[in-house]
Image (cartoon, rainbow, N blue to C red; front, top):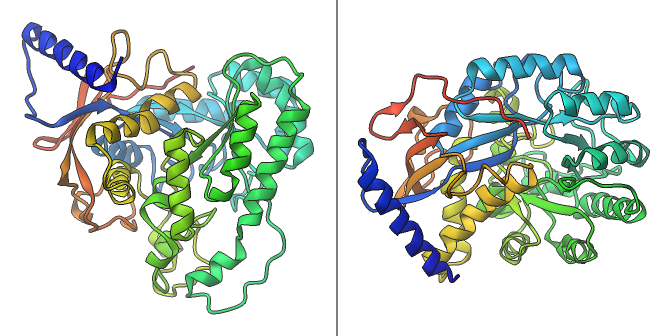
Length: 440
């Protein structure tokens, strides 16, 4: 079926439903899309609620059209790496979440060689696992090496759960130059760090391809920032290796030349690179080599971003922006592909932010599409209207966000989670705790 035929069929189904419903929410000619599914969020609770917390993060998600979040095992304290920490975080999510939430468990050297523990984490509700190949900068979350990954892969494959990896292998690099200059920081994390890590992961998948593997296992390279690797990744995918890729909206929204001296709000790892790299990542999305986008929402207290000092080498390396991922992505798409047909772009955005992440996470049969039998997770938005990026409307706990006061197109008018309106731009955020803990 042609895309235009599909859109017409959906309109006809919506009109039929409209006639049957007693209560109607009329948003005029706004776009109705599947709710966004974000596989990459750091809520920082328990233990670091002053960084963000579940209430702030899920409120920001609701206002931003994100209906399902996957919580990373760090930066909570303790990290989610054993049954005790998993159950404690699950209990908090059940009480506080305003949108649907699932939990990744951490795979670290201390549990990678314990198949019984990894098995128990899956059985008790972990959606999959996340590792860092480089130091994470968080106590209790050590980075893994090749031996650790090799030890854990058989368990992950047998259970058919995703494995998310921060793929950088740092080497000694000199931090010469002015620490207030972004190029000084950029030089400390060259593309080679990602290249070495991604090539190791591809090799590991090749040498272990004989291992029993249940459907659902996939190795997801998170927040890829090196477009030069896309050719090698595509080759691995064409070989049938279970490797997928995520990138982040800040790599599409900004380039290195957008980062002024001392603007540490845009420090992240891997770093934002040049325009040619940005265009390569966007092309990778359009070509299907990169499957999904994730916010990598990694907030911190504003003082940790060292805006007064402006030292890129010392500032916290994370970007806060969960509330703005839809307009940031849409605005970047308009800029990077100005002649694209809007209908096609809308479908692409839904594929990258809803359908594909749901399928990667094993929730494809109920999340990520507007279709019969799927959860009623919806976002109503106006692609032509400016989003409210003022600090006064921000739901994040710490108002240090690179999207503040930017002109971003794509205003969210309403967010619906499993049939409940959790946000309406005219009435505000629902006071109810409408979310629930999700399992594969």
